[in-house]
Length: 289
Image (cartoon, rainbow, N blue to C red; front, side, top):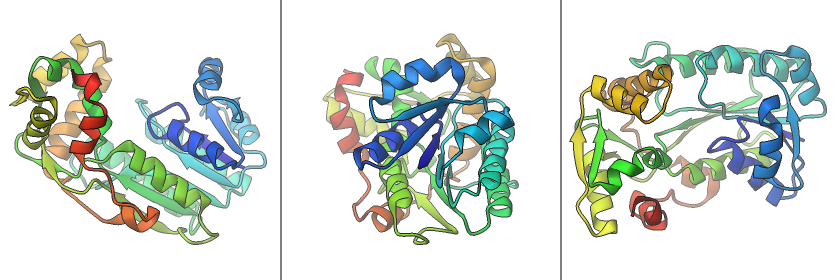
């Protein structure tokens, strides 16, 4: 049995569906309040169970009979604490393989908060599940452009990243990597860390040029100050704490050049090349029209 945490998120939902499509027994672990909606979103053939991540008993029950875990937790102010609970429960349950979704360049000594958090979590996974883990160090998702689709429709791409570049990756490639790792031969991926990136390091200026080419109308990158970016996110309805996390990520992770990494690990893990931004924009052009 494969348990997926973050099962309604961008990568987690894809992993659940990929495992179900391969007829692998899969269990989606979600918050109680999200259980009904998750069952509808994920479809038939998926065991959807409720467990709050700070409830040790509920986590034990959720991991009963589970051999593999994919953890792709998303937006949470206490992410480090919550994922540590998942790791503890996986260790107690005797899980054979824990696959963690992380960031491409993380560490407790890195400049942004999210890099430090994932660095702390990677250390925790290695210490508590030695030889029983695989870490997917993921670059910035192309899907993040959906969050600024309104601005792109109006002809601008406002981000606080200057000329810095990132190996932007399609979340579908992350899902393919996770599915390959989870379904791989026993021991094939244990103890390994993969850098999951797109095929090229691109600035947001490059991305704007790509949108211009594909959409057939001008889209201009605008380098906005951090405070203005936070204000815009809050105005769009995001909680201020999360807007500040996003700004920190874009200014001190992406903007500092830490996301410029490009690797061939997607091809190594899946046998297929990662998708380019132009192909992704072309397939999703309607969202930006």
